[in-house]
Image 1 (cartoon, rainbow, N blue to C red):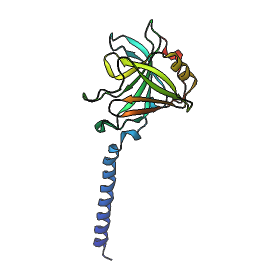
Image 2: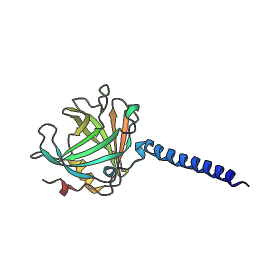
Image 3: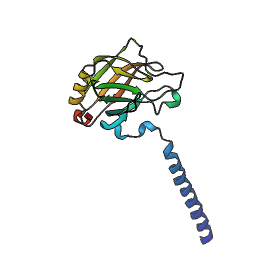
Image 4: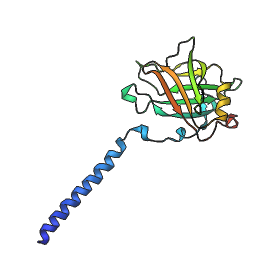
Length: 190
Protein backbone atom coordinates (compact mmCIF):
# COMPACT_ATOMS: atom_id res chain seq x y z
CA UNK A 1 0.00 0.00 0.00
CA UNK A 2 1.03 3.50 -0.71
CA UNK A 3 1.95 5.60 2.42
CA UNK A 4 0.18 8.63 0.94
CA UNK A 5 -3.06 6.65 0.64
CA UNK A 6 -2.80 5.51 4.31
CA UNK A 7 -2.11 9.08 5.42
CA UNK A 8 -5.23 10.29 3.60
CA UNK A 9 -7.40 7.60 5.22
CA UNK A 10 -5.95 8.22 8.70
CA UNK A 11 -6.22 12.00 8.33
CA UNK A 12 -9.83 11.73 7.19
CA UNK A 13 -10.72 9.38 10.07
CA UNK A 14 -9.01 11.64 12.60
CA UNK A 15 -10.99 14.60 11.25
CA UNK A 16 -14.28 12.69 11.55
CA UNK A 17 -13.43 11.55 15.09
CA UNK A 18 -12.51 15.11 16.13
CA UNK A 19 -15.75 16.45 14.61
CA UNK A 20 -17.76 13.81 16.52
CA UNK A 21 -16.12 14.68 19.86
CA UNK A 22 -16.58 18.43 19.35
CA UNK A 23 -20.22 17.88 18.32
CA UNK A 24 -20.89 15.85 21.48
CA UNK A 25 -19.32 18.50 23.69
CA UNK A 26 -21.60 21.18 22.23
CA UNK A 27 -24.67 18.94 22.52
CA UNK A 28 -24.25 18.13 26.24
CA UNK A 29 -25.49 21.51 27.61
CA UNK A 30 -28.72 21.04 25.65
CA UNK A 31 -29.79 18.07 27.80
CA UNK A 32 -33.02 18.78 29.74
CA UNK A 33 -32.54 20.49 33.08
CA UNK A 34 -34.70 17.98 34.90
CA UNK A 35 -31.73 15.62 34.60
CA UNK A 36 -29.64 17.96 36.75
CA UNK A 37 -29.36 17.50 40.48
CA UNK A 38 -29.35 20.64 42.59
CA UNK A 39 -28.14 20.76 46.22
CA UNK A 40 -31.55 22.02 47.40
CA UNK A 41 -33.15 18.87 45.97
CA UNK A 42 -31.08 16.66 48.26
CA UNK A 43 -31.72 18.21 51.68
CA UNK A 44 -33.11 21.29 53.37
CA UNK A 45 -31.06 24.43 52.72
CA UNK A 46 -30.80 27.03 55.49
CA UNK A 47 -30.15 30.72 54.93
CA UNK A 48 -31.39 34.14 55.96
CA UNK A 49 -33.78 35.46 53.33
CA UNK A 50 -35.22 38.99 52.97
CA UNK A 51 -38.86 39.54 53.87
CA UNK A 52 -40.88 40.45 50.75
CA UNK A 53 -42.41 43.52 52.47
CA UNK A 54 -39.77 44.87 54.84
CA UNK A 55 -36.55 43.50 53.38
CA UNK A 56 -35.47 42.31 56.86
CA UNK A 57 -33.47 39.08 56.84
CA UNK A 58 -35.24 36.12 58.44
CA UNK A 59 -34.09 32.52 58.90
CA UNK A 60 -35.57 30.16 56.29
CA UNK A 61 -35.30 26.50 55.33
CA UNK A 62 -35.92 25.66 51.67
CA UNK A 63 -36.36 22.41 49.76
CA UNK A 64 -36.64 22.23 45.96
CA UNK A 65 -38.89 19.69 44.21
CA UNK A 66 -37.36 16.84 42.26
CA UNK A 67 -39.89 17.21 39.45
CA UNK A 68 -41.28 20.04 37.32
CA UNK A 69 -44.78 20.83 36.08
CA UNK A 70 -45.46 20.26 32.37
CA UNK A 71 -46.99 23.68 31.64
CA UNK A 72 -46.27 26.29 30.49
CA UNK A 73 -44.40 24.30 27.86
CA UNK A 74 -41.95 27.17 27.44
CA UNK A 75 -40.73 26.68 31.03
CA UNK A 76 -41.52 23.00 31.65
CA UNK A 77 -37.91 22.07 32.35
CA UNK A 78 -37.49 24.81 34.94
CA UNK A 79 -40.94 24.85 36.58
CA UNK A 80 -39.79 23.48 39.95
CA UNK A 81 -41.62 23.83 43.25
CA UNK A 82 -40.24 25.03 46.57
CA UNK A 83 -41.19 24.32 50.15
CA UNK A 84 -39.97 26.95 52.55
CA UNK A 85 -40.29 27.36 56.29
CA UNK A 86 -39.69 30.87 57.59
CA UNK A 87 -39.09 32.08 61.12
CA UNK A 88 -40.39 35.65 61.30
CA UNK A 89 -40.00 37.45 64.65
CA UNK A 90 -43.11 37.37 66.81
CA UNK A 91 -44.96 34.99 64.46
CA UNK A 92 -45.37 31.21 64.27
CA UNK A 93 -43.26 29.38 61.69
CA UNK A 94 -44.67 29.95 58.20
CA UNK A 95 -44.78 27.08 55.68
CA UNK A 96 -44.99 28.15 52.05
CA UNK A 97 -45.35 26.23 48.77
CA UNK A 98 -44.30 28.15 45.68
CA UNK A 99 -43.76 27.52 42.00
CA UNK A 100 -41.28 29.18 39.65
CA UNK A 101 -42.31 32.61 38.40
CA UNK A 102 -44.79 32.29 35.54
CA UNK A 103 -45.66 34.32 32.49
CA UNK A 104 -48.25 37.06 33.23
CA UNK A 105 -51.15 35.03 31.75
CA UNK A 106 -50.51 32.14 34.15
CA UNK A 107 -50.78 33.25 37.73
CA UNK A 108 -49.52 30.09 39.40
CA UNK A 109 -51.40 28.25 42.10
CA UNK A 110 -55.19 28.01 42.12
CA UNK A 111 -56.00 29.22 45.61
CA UNK A 112 -58.82 31.69 46.17
CA UNK A 113 -58.58 34.41 48.85
CA UNK A 114 -60.95 32.30 51.00
CA UNK A 115 -58.36 29.53 50.95
CA UNK A 116 -57.77 26.12 49.40
CA UNK A 117 -56.78 22.59 50.41
CA UNK A 118 -53.53 20.79 49.67
CA UNK A 119 -52.68 17.19 50.48
CA UNK A 120 -49.30 16.23 51.88
CA UNK A 121 -47.97 12.69 52.32
CA UNK A 122 -44.77 12.18 54.33
CA UNK A 123 -42.65 9.11 53.57
CA UNK A 124 -45.45 7.41 51.62
CA UNK A 125 -47.89 7.47 54.53
CA UNK A 126 -51.52 8.48 54.23
CA UNK A 127 -51.95 12.04 52.98
CA UNK A 128 -52.96 14.80 55.39
CA UNK A 129 -55.04 17.76 54.19
CA UNK A 130 -53.82 21.25 55.02
CA UNK A 131 -55.72 24.49 54.55
CA UNK A 132 -53.77 27.21 52.72
CA UNK A 133 -54.25 30.77 51.52
CA UNK A 134 -52.58 32.85 48.81
CA UNK A 135 -49.37 34.58 49.85
CA UNK A 136 -49.72 38.36 49.89
CA UNK A 137 -48.24 39.92 46.76
CA UNK A 138 -47.00 36.59 45.40
CA UNK A 139 -49.47 34.67 43.15
CA UNK A 140 -46.99 31.82 42.69
CA UNK A 141 -47.12 30.92 46.40
CA UNK A 142 -49.51 29.72 49.08
CA UNK A 143 -49.04 29.69 52.85
CA UNK A 144 -50.38 26.98 55.18
CA UNK A 145 -52.86 28.34 57.74
CA UNK A 146 -51.59 26.01 60.47
CA UNK A 147 -47.99 25.04 60.04
CA UNK A 148 -47.28 23.25 63.33
CA UNK A 149 -48.44 19.80 62.10
CA UNK A 150 -46.41 20.16 58.90
CA UNK A 151 -43.28 21.29 60.77
CA UNK A 152 -43.63 18.45 63.30
CA UNK A 153 -43.91 15.85 60.51
CA UNK A 154 -40.99 17.40 58.57
CA UNK A 155 -38.73 17.17 61.63
CA UNK A 156 -39.48 13.44 61.95
CA UNK A 157 -39.53 12.40 58.29
CA UNK A 158 -36.98 12.81 55.56
CA UNK A 159 -37.34 10.36 52.69
CA UNK A 160 -40.14 12.01 50.73
CA UNK A 161 -42.78 14.70 50.89
CA UNK A 162 -45.46 14.54 48.20
CA UNK A 163 -47.62 17.66 47.85
CA UNK A 164 -50.82 17.64 45.77
CA UNK A 165 -52.46 20.96 44.89
CA UNK A 166 -54.45 22.78 42.21
CA UNK A 167 -52.52 24.78 39.65
CA UNK A 168 -54.28 27.23 37.31
CA UNK A 169 -52.61 25.88 34.19
CA UNK A 170 -51.80 22.28 35.10
CA UNK A 171 -54.96 21.43 37.05
CA UNK A 172 -54.47 18.76 39.73
CA UNK A 173 -50.71 18.71 40.23
CA UNK A 174 -48.08 17.28 42.53
CA UNK A 175 -44.55 18.01 43.53
CA UNK A 176 -42.22 15.41 44.98
CA UNK A 177 -39.70 16.64 47.55
CA UNK A 178 -37.06 14.60 49.32
CA UNK A 179 -34.42 15.25 51.93
CA UNK A 180 -31.56 13.09 53.17
CA UNK A 181 -32.10 14.58 56.64
CA UNK A 182 -35.21 15.76 58.50
CA UNK A 183 -35.91 19.47 58.97
CA UNK A 184 -33.61 20.92 61.68
CA UNK A 185 -35.58 23.50 63.67
CA UNK A 186 -32.45 24.63 65.52
CA UNK A 187 -31.12 26.06 62.24
CA UNK A 188 -34.18 28.32 61.97
CA UNK A 189 -33.35 30.27 65.13
CA UNK A 190 -32.13 33.86 64.92
